[in-house]
Image (cartoon, rainbow, N blue to C red; front, side, top):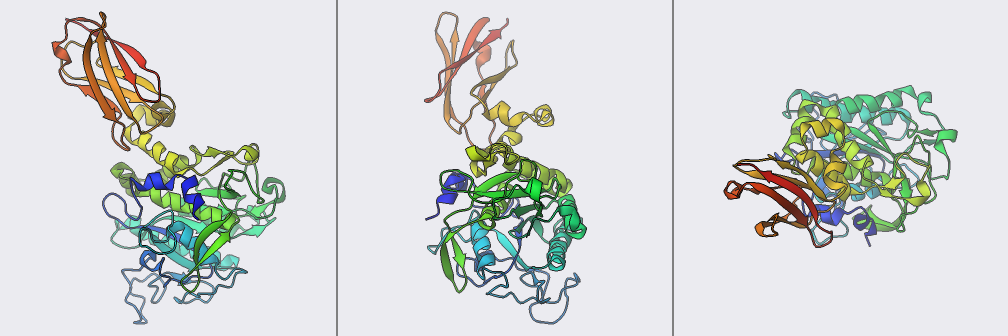
Length: 445
């Protein structure tokens, strides 16, 4: 029923994390601007954000953010903390559909699973431009306070999903809305926007907000089970990538579930969910970056998504990446960044260096006289590899099998090579699915 999760590689990623928390335990929040939220839904209730700095029902703005009793976010349509189960959008289930894709609770013997099994979803109703901008500002204030107080106030909002927009309107026609994306990004929040469901070249016809040029905005069109672009907006400049947007099963109102949902409104939350999952990876350095340099962390996560897409043949020339979200490969990108040297990160070639082919990258030291020998390798998959070292007579001097593990160094260490006689040796790296790759090693007296 949930083909899309398989398509983006979510089950393999769940072997590493099911989302919800950064390595230190800080709570990851994904904001949703939409309409029609059943926050008591059996598959969502555990993952709805709760404001820990507000006292329920006391009529006081306890956290002094301008909103009274905003325990579960805010309704910017009614200007109240009450969320409407049946939203004012044409689809009254719309907000629930979106939330289920992002973070329906997983492994609970109920309904469906979201991209994240555990994550906090911040619901915000917003329909007209003023309400949408206010909702963005609310999420912005939460993250800005979080950054300023090192997590003592606010919330660790990493993404805002907007499965909404205005067809054939240019971004610069609504400057107040346009301005929000860079402001959010400077605090570390990536925004995800769904393009139109009409088959339009938005580069030529316009679309709000997917024609906004912010580096912190990821724009999404829809693809199907065959990895083909389905009827929806496109644009070689304005649309970044596709995500599953057909026959989606997700949460609906009144503790229900909905099958056959589609369109870019369903595609965008797969990307927003992926952002949350990437922040949940066991990468302490990314978490530290998110606090020390929030926009840099946002750019890194954006690059992980956009540089690792799976090809979508009929999107060639119709989107920036010509591809579909691949969460597993986005995780692989972060793995490569984690194990890369500083010069490789700076050059921006770490993903290809460690995953683009299979072979020995470097042997250090080489030549060597004694001490530990380190051999760093590249591999396109998390697979077992075996290192063999032979002398020039073909005698086996060393053998070791190592499983390539996510976020662990791709380095094999030989602690006792000092005992080898001086001479030339051949290191061969083999796996079950690739031919051996060799490199010469020189031992000096």
